[in-house]
Length: 118
Picture 1 (tube, rainbow, N blue to C red):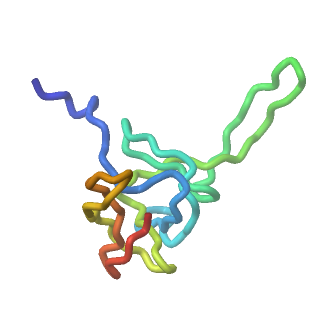
Picture 2 (picture 1 turned 120 degrees about the horizontal axis):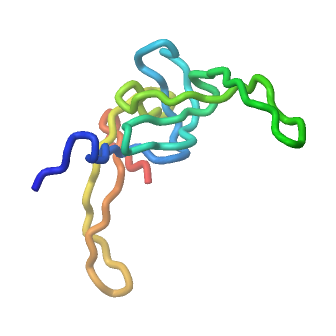
């Protein structure tokens, strides 16, 4: 049985903490670190990018007012930054010896240079 399009989780090679650049849209050219990835909706929140204003009601302690915070951007509009240049990501599977046994290990690789990221 297939899942509905809404129930499917978006697959990505990006991780929280990666430095990315926005490649299209209103905030094109801006760079920042990924704070959160929402795989259900396929959106990312990037530090200091796509700032929105939110009006918050005052609570019992008197806190509230107009708050600026980061808004979500679709994951297809961002690209990983490797050595200051946007690049695609791939996966390299290598057999390594760990604890005396051969094990397959996956590494993220920058497609432009072929360097292992982590």
